[in-house]
Structure formats: C-alpha cells, structure tokens
Length: 308
Ligand SMILES: [Zn+2]
View 1 (cartoon, protein in one colour):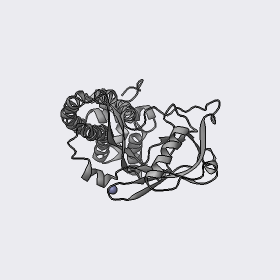
View 2 (cartoon, protein in one colour):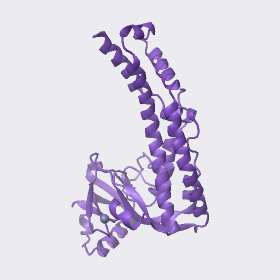
View 3 (cartoon, protein in one colour):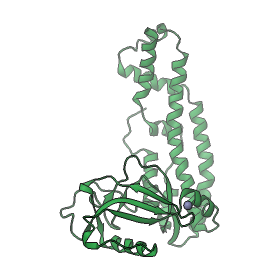
View 4 (cartoon, helix red, strand yellow):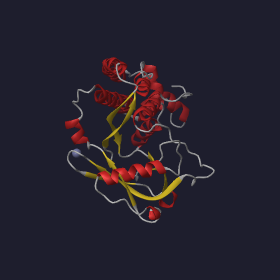
C-alpha cells in the first residue's frame, strides 16, 4: 500500500456532493483584508429548523467562534427578514444584531416527514435528489465498509495466533516497519470479504448512475427541489465567496440529522456528481482506505497479552 499522492476518491466524492447539493463553494481558510466591509455583524447563537409538515422545531447551536459574531451579507439579512415575516415572527432591531442573541430561521422538512412527503415523489427534479442522496450514502458506506473489513482480516489473523512462539518466529517484536509490512501482507492474503463489498457497491451504483443520467439529461438547466442538508455541516452566511468570518460551525455535540431545504439545483453540478470517478478495483479500495496504525496496535497488543 503506497502512500497516497492524490485525493482519496471517497473524499473527492464527498466534496463534489457538497458542491452540488449543500454549499456552492468550498470553505476558504483565509482572513480577508477588511472582514467588516459590506457585512453585518450578528451575534449568531443558533439555528431553528421548522418542519412545514409536522410543525416540529429543531435547534442547532453554533460554536462560539470570533467572539460570537458572525458576518452576514446584506442579502442574507434581507432573506432572514423575509423568513421571519413568513413565519409571523418579528425581526429583531437591526441596530442591535451585534448585541443580542440571534436565531437563524430555516424552513425544512425533518427526516421523518421527508420520507413520507418527498421520498416517493414522481417529479424528476425531486427524484434526482433522492437518487443522488442514495448514491452519496453508498459512497460513504463503501469507505466505512472497506476499513471495517480490513480490520476484520487483521482480527482473524490475530485470533489465529495461539502462542507467543508463532509471533517470535516472525521476528517482529520491535520493528515498526516490519509490523506494517506484516499488516499489509495479512490484508492482501484475506481479501475475499473486501472483494464482496466492492462487488455489492458496484452492483448498487451502476443502475443508479444509469437511471440518474437518463433523468438528469431531460432536466432544465436548473430547478427547485428539497435538498437534504445535515445539521452538523457548517453554513455560510453569504451567498458569494466566504471565509472564516462569515461561516457558522455547529457545536461539536450537534446531533446529526438531515433537513430538506427548498433550493436551486443545477443540472451541470448534478452531472458532475454522478459522473465522478468511483472506486472500481480492489487496489483502489485499498489505496482509498490507506494504512491505519490501529492495525499495528492490534498485533502488538496480542503479543503483549501472550507474554503475560
Ligand atoms: Zn416533520
């Protein structure tokens, strides 16, 4: 398993998925020369999602970065005024946004209601969102499965060792590089389960991608649909280029849950997501997972327990 000189395929898929459906631009870790220009400082405390179907409310607290102040573009403030008005709530005094806790209001179907109201939608624009989300989950799952199955292979090998003489024969007690080589050999000799996981993934992905291409090809350049957004992802408070003063990060203990927000989806970005390169071979699967030190630890721990 060589060191990776490229972005992991599954990381890239996640980035493209987010680009197509969640945030239009990647987050830039830079400090602008004049962060306050054209922005409105807001003491942003949390975000309230309101489900239009069950009328449920779900609060996500934000991390208290930049002394609790997040910078909004004026267009985003105007947008919030509209949402507040639509919900029959009074928008706070604009002169005091920097002093008083502000709750960002969003309307979005909760996961349970989305399953009832949106999942079976016949509208191609909404169906595309569902299928892309299914594809995204498969991409995420195959990465998790690959690592788990490689860990299982190391575990099976560790379990097969009954006394310390078997380990001594390998002369691996102290050399980290030898242990690493051993782990690689163990995994490469026990790939049946990995190959099965890869086959399952490919069998599931292929018809999905085919159906998505057909559906997407007859869509307009862009359309409106309900798009899932996870509660744990950061959010930009500008619609243009954004940076650390305009981004709100959910608190670390935020419970992960999808909310379906009505927004514009672009055909070209959907096409970009569905035609991305996906894991196709065992070698790519191994490379994508990379090497994990915990596998070396499993062997070291076994050696230690046998010596007792
Ligand atoms: Zn609901």
